[in-house]
Amino acid sequence: MRGLFLAAAIFAASCHAAPADASGTITILEGDALIYRGLGRLHAAEGVRLVAGDIVETAPATFMQLELPDQTVAQFGSGTRVMLGAAARGKSERWLYLLEGWAKLSAMKREAAAGPGIELRSPMLDIPASSAVVVLRVLPAEVNLFAERGEVRVSERQASGAPVVMVLKGGDFYRRKAGTRGAVNPGSMQGFVDEMPRFFRDSLPLRAERFRDQVVKPKEAPEFAYADVERWLKSEPAVRRPLMQRWRAKAREPAFRSALIANLSSHPEWDPILFPEKYLPKETAARSPAAAASAAR
Image (cartoon, rainbow, N blue to C red):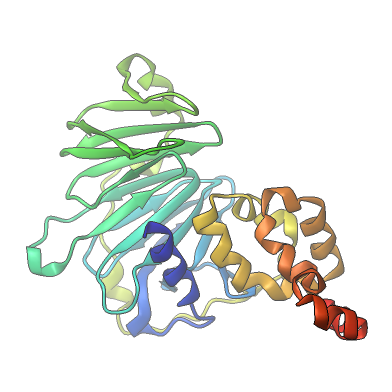
């Protein structure tokens, strides 16, 4: 079911964000960041509204603050890859998927009628919506989490079976390496604090109101190559399969196509797009090899 929610969110993303569809507004940007939307890329800027399905990637030495409609604040450090998502139309579930890098989520206390808030998801664990303040760092084979304020429920993903839930209290530092169970480990917290983005230590003002009546259009950025999105294409199936549908036209680009074929074992769902003739009914393929060749182009 979780995979279906991810798929629905990504399919719903459009190439242009209308204010009514906005999942958040970039209110502070120190440095450079790119937004992947549809088949293109955009330069992030203060005042730009993001929509469900957008992927944001921050450059080195960059800090970004994103304010959501309910005043929840998400902050991102340098070298961060994150996707914004939401459930199918008519549902209130919203989430951030942190593939790599630094994120700080400061949730607002809300009435039940305001909806469930925003979830924080990552390759090794998920954090349900709450009113806590959480700092998370995701590395390729490790995840670190600091519960700055409030109770945090950590749902550890397992290779098989149901997730394992741990409950952290304010002040706890949690660490998990790939293939192991996570644990509260205050002994290794100093290195985490030393490397944490300095802006995460500050209480920054909310600035969404100043952009409320502005429509800031992001500037187009150069087209992306396979290497730019390789981490996403090799992510978990629930994330990468909808991206395949979004980016399937890239398979017509020779360099992108060659890279897809070379890495096909990491994303086998691309096989029908790359080699459609293999999936034609046998009778059709035998009668019309030219049609199969045409479909592959």
